[in-house]
Length: 208
Image (cartoon, rainbow, N blue to C red; front, side):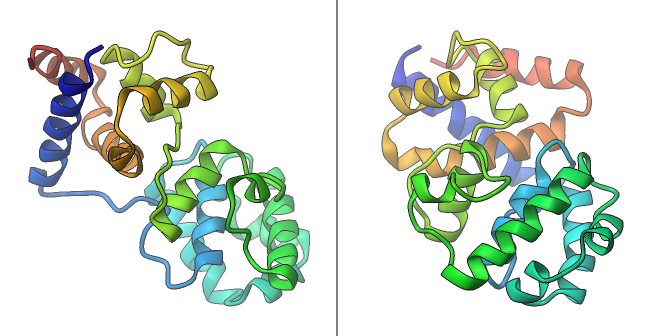
């Protein structure tokens, strides 16, 4: 794939998202403190952003500091976040992570973020983009699916690390921190119907 063509395709998708009247809010957006952003991203894995945001609002209204969340009981947190997928594992992780960051602060490097419970490559990268405006690419299911369909990568869907590295090679660094937002937003708007998504992507692949 040629870099200039990939940039045109990404820009085309960005314009589609911006023209859509129901531009979605992603789970990582709109929180007033970085620790909330991080917890929201952890909770968003394998869960729709709309549902994650709804659950996070309930969670943060009761636990409005990372210290309070870190001291919360597992059963209470599990009950509050039960609507997100893998809620038992996530409840354990966010309590542990909240406790750590309330005592030591939020790490500012990718490597240190990965040491937190429940934080993988995608979560760390999306957090760095949202909270620090850092150049990073968070690869989730939408990014994997669309990158493969657009021939931006030849990696398998499950190879998130390989896809991340292919996208880093394909796109100049100044585009990195917009890739997740554009592809996830596009997927949420148009991906509910794979037929509609594929029809749009056929037009995108014609761009030269």
